[in-house]
Image 1 (cartoon, protein in one colour):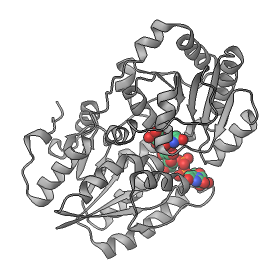
Image 2 (tube, protein in one colour):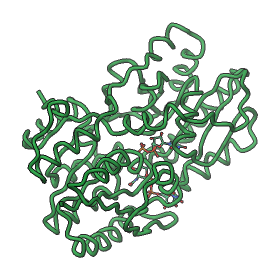
Image 3 (cartoon, protein in one colour):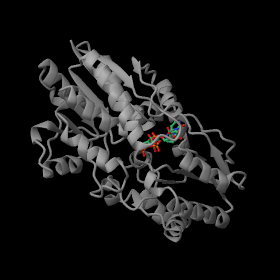
Amino acid sequence: MKKIICTIGTRPEAIKMAPLIRALQADPGFDCRVLATAQHRQMLDQVLDIFGIVPDIDLDIMQPGQTLSGLTGRLLIRLEEVLAREKPDAVIAQGDTTTVLATALAAFHERIPFGHVEAGLRTGDLDSPFPEEMNRVVASQLTRWHFAPTGLAANRLLAEGHDGARVHVTGNTVIDALHHVAATAPDPGLGLDPARRMLLVTLHRRENFGAPLLRICDALAALMRDNPDVQMVLPVHHNPNVREVIRARFDGAERVILCEPLDYAAFVGAMQRATLILSDSGGVQEEAPALGKPVLVLRDTTERPEAVMEGVTRLVGTATETIRAAAQELLDDPSAYAAMARHHSPYGDGAAAGRILAVLRRDLLGVAIPVSDRVQMAA
Ligand code: UD1
Ligand code: UDP
């Protein structure tokens, strides 16, 4: 039996690792241990509850208002202790957070092979998203198994010189997670008026803190002013740089529902209920197209161009008037709306975790990959 440690730190990592953790835990060939760094506390715990995952090790690392270097330093010291003690055969993490960077580096220091889920996403700009682009570029240098969600992501890794034999196109595990909850996702409740259309908004990116976030708020306020038949739901991220600004701007505003972060099933229910989604989130750009919901991406760059190219998300930046006009067009023009609301999923078919498991079984247990799980290699 081979021991694998799966590391998770923040909300999206838990959502995207849950399908793989469940697959590894169900496989008698693996002893899968879950290591929660708890870079996020409340938002991580919400997801673990939904997927029934209990961490074997919990570093409980989060501090209010944590800095990037402080967080990285604390993570490296604690991860070194755990990896030296547990001596796993492999370590796996997902995405581009500080937890992932620290996990890849700590595994490298302990000479333990590292598997990277959602590998190969790039904007080409180290400042955007900040610090995530740097985190994933560095993590790729330290990776034994690159699990790329799309052919485009795989090809980026090949273009950077990574060994094609280590790059596997698997789909994104977020679609596996979405399938797990979508059929039974509850109505979000929240006192919504059934007669009104609904905007769903999420905001948290560091490069949007300050002036861009204020411009986004201006656009949202203008949309609410101009469209009396519209209500807006905004689950407010715990990061104080977001929370204080959003609350100051929208607390008590008419037809605006500010709420705590929703648990995953309730948030999927909210996406299903939404008319239109405005977000700077990565995961939402992947999930909403699969649910047939248009997303306006409130960023200047995206590492998820597949959905933009296929016309199911639109990159609108952070200028007030651009955001307002793009949203207004979708609210007013049924054909523009229908062109985006196509239930099209560029990021996977819900079977990504099985493909990742098949690669790990081949390389760690010597089991041939079944034809059904053979992953398409990058072109
Ligand atoms: C982090 C990730 C980002 C990811 C996002 C997902 C980094 C540098 N950033 O951003 O890539 O897209 O998570 O949401 O890895 N806080 C709480 N409770 C929580 C979560 C956060 O109180 O459950 C507050 C704390 O004050 C904490 C602060 O938010 O110090 C920032 O958390 P942090 O994980 O450093 O950054 P995020 O902005 O959440
Ligand atoms: N999400 C959630 N509750 C919310 C808002 C988002 O469960 O109130 C989910 C969402 O469906 C997606 C993930 O959180 O799967 C995205 O997380 P976030 O936007 O925090 O991070 P990112 O994806 O940008 O790294």
